[in-house]
Structures are given as C-alpha cells and as structure tokens.
Length: 355
Ligand code: ATP
Image 1 (cartoon, rainbow, N blue to C red):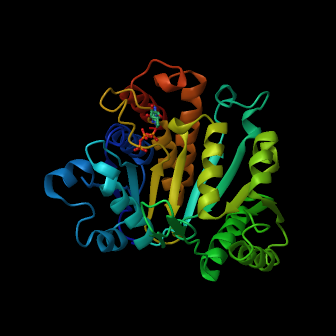
Image 2: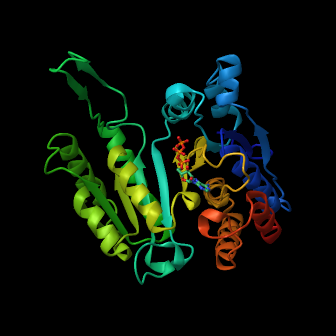
Image 3: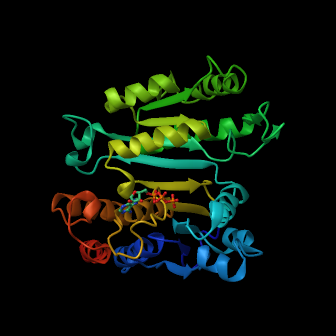
C-alpha cells in the first residue's frame, strides 16, 4: 500500500451489470465529499469484467495483483456476474483471485439499520440493530481443497476440506478485538460449532481463550452458530462485534443484511489492515434490473464510506452515512426501497448533500 504518497489512489472496478451503474455514483459522491481536501483522491478506472473477458479472454490481466498492491491504496468494486459467461468464471478469477492473492483476510460486514421502516423485526429502532460481523475470508471451507470419488455413479462421494490455520484464526480474532477497542465497543462474540466440529473449531476455541486474555477491557463471549442465528433475530441489541469462520460469516452476515434493509443497502470490505484492500457492495450484478437505471446506489455509497474510513477520512465517511440516512428519511430512494427515483438522481442528491 502506498500510504503517504501525494494522493490516495483508488482503483475503480465497476465490473458488470448494476456494478456499472452504482459505482460511478459512488465516485461522484466521494469526489464531492473530499473536494476541499489537501490530499485529494485519485481514481483509476479498470475495465475488468464480462465484456473484457468475452472480447479478449482475459479475467485478471497479467501483473494485475502486483499493480494493485504496489500502486493503489484501495479498490472500489462494483459487482461481477453476467449471464453470457457460463459459471461466471471471470467473477471467480477476479474476485477470489484478489481476495486470496492480496491476502484480504478480514471480511467486514457492518449491520446498521438506517431507518426503522426497513427492518423486518417488529418494534426495533435504528439503534437496536447495529453490529459488525467479521468473517474470516481466506480459509475454511472456501479454499477449494477436496475432490470426488466415483463421480456420477450411485456410490459417489464428495469431500470438501475445512482448512483452519493457527495464524489465520488468530489474526481474525485479534482483528475483532482490536476493532472493538478502537471503536470504543464493549462486546465481542466469537461463534463456531465446536461441539460438532471437534477439531477445526477446537482450534478456534483455544485461540479465542488465549487472545481474549489480552483484552480484559472487552466483554467476550462465545455462542454456537445456531444459537447466534436465533439470538441475532430475537434481540440484536446484544451484539457489538461478531467474529466467525468463512462459512458461518457468509450466512450470518446475510442474515444481518436483511435485518438492516436488505441487499440494496449492505456494504462490505475485504481488508488486510495496512495493505491495499477491496471494498464492495454485498449485492451482485442483478442482471434482471441492469441497464434500467433503477439500481439502488446506497449499498455502494455505504461501501465507499467504509473505504474512506479505511483511508483515514473518518469525517467524510460520516458525511456519506448521514446523507444516506437523510435520503431514507425523505424517501429519496430507488424502487427497491419503495421510492420512485433513478440511480443517478439518488447519486446526485447525495453528492449535493455531502459536497
Ligand atoms: P449475481 O449473480 O451477480 O450475484 P444476482 O442477481 O444473482 O447477481 P444480486 O445481484 O445480489 O444477485 O441480487 C438479487 C436481486 O436483488 C437482484 O436480482 C435484484 O432484483 C435485487 N437487488 C440487488 N441489488 C440491488 C440494488 N442495488 N438495487 C436494486 N435491487 C437490487
């Protein structure tokens, strides 16, 4: 990461489908919010995605990872996925490639309710639904180790290995505690399934017990993942920071996204603290609404707020969040949230507000 250079450099990767519609809105909003700064941000757009893949057969160009690592501070990502590409091979190559090759071991998924009409939970106020999920992002069941035996026969066996390294478990748990301390939050909950996954999650248990001793100022607790799923719905006020493995984090963070208004609003970061990190809205390319100008840009705007905070622009990040809150309050939103505004209108409105 080039921190300390003349300007923070951001690689903008709109990708496919609605990624191409929401990402320019975010860039517009970020420019407006950071206009008067001493050290303005510099954006470089990259055209990686389905069109390039279909045209040139290229997913991640040669040298791409090194370039991002050495020449950029952050990556603002839209979405990848296109019905013309069978199996979305390009998306896997680009997104998973960057996640693993840049070693982005923290998947940060904030769950924050910006307007109480958006939650499916009865009688919950904005301040009741506000927690951070840290999902381990480079190991677990997602490493692709496994195989088939007697494939396509009646006796077929499929094996998928769950990989958990001491280093990998420790760094994500430590990150959760560090984050809580830095943000002045009081509670960290580690979730696993150590009663059934008696090897992999025994490691999580041992590491958690060890690391928590260094953070006695923070209340730490353990819940099995099934209990966590119930408790998050029953009373989300119990949680400040949740940390868990790749698979469980994938699921619980999507559950959290629904508690806070759904896919159109959910932001995420794929982070390696101190190194080039990637920020993306949780939604995909949504081919069903792509090209219609009605995609909700607020997930990407909130993602940009996370990126700005990562780059040290805390005040500007807060401006983006405040403007999003205001858009929801005034119902200046796209159809998915019950409004009648276009993607660009919402982007312009937010940009004017933060500028
Ligand atoms: P992908 O294969 O790229 O993940 P997908 O369509 O399967 O795409 P998503 O794009 O994540 O999955 O979203 C599912 C549905 O939710 C979309 O088809 C769309 O109707 C809706 N949706 C998602 N994001 C948005 C958004 N930003 N604005 C409006 N609707 C959205």
